[in-house]
Image (cartoon, rainbow, N blue to C red; front, side, top):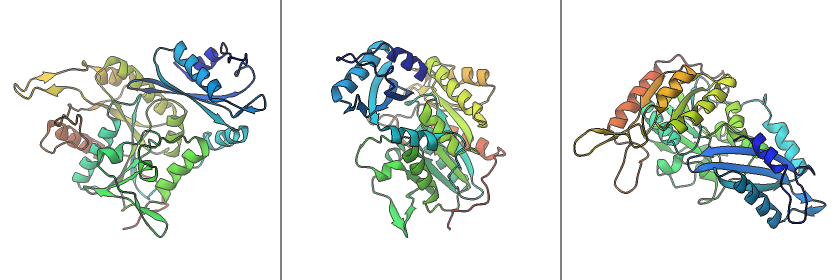
Length: 357
């Protein structure tokens, strides 16, 4: 399912009063994002149809039509936007824009996935901690502007502090942490595209007082849509680690994300299989609730190594935890992953320094 598929379907949509939004040029763009519970479709439309503001009824009808056309669509959102805003977004979000300045000499690792719900953020924070435990100064930037979860996984709830107009990142086990979560209200949705998306990424990177990081882990948005591609372009020197689960459907989606990253000249370090198996607490044998072989499929089809197979980590009734316990088999997997990353000859950023001791 692609944006082109959605646009082709919209050719057959009419409102209750007979308007055909696609034929009339009211559809601006379509984004399709895979998530664990199904596809999410965002449709930007003109904010005025036939000289009148687009109505909630028209938007609801359009969203219902898309959900009726595709059983895999879990959510469809129709977002009004003026033509001027649309044009500005297209100009700023186009390829070739200058990436944000980064701390000098830092090696960046983008953690990516084909869809949400595979544990990409969990892999990000545990990789960052493992690098810090190896003695490297480490930071993590939560670039998933719409689905930020890094602060929640690290149990960070306080607003970010500032100093002379710059952000002081919270530190967890020696890791600098920066996320959009620190700047929005409780559970508030973020509906940014184009210029505001770029501004948010740039401000979090450039206006943060990083503590001389040697490694910066980037938790990128999932999927292969416009949002994921835009954020990829902000960090052209970042190498990528691809996250999947053992499920074969998840592996196919992950493979597409890897192909997209490679098409954007991203170096793929390898694939991590999260929730690879579960250890029986009584007999110690391994269970495979999500099947087996997902990472191996991705590895073979993309010709990249399997970097780690991380077991489930379950903590009481809270489900999968954030930072894994240090005596858990998953912690060993992350330590080995960090050692592999540290042994890789990554390209650091340029000479412009934003860091402070």
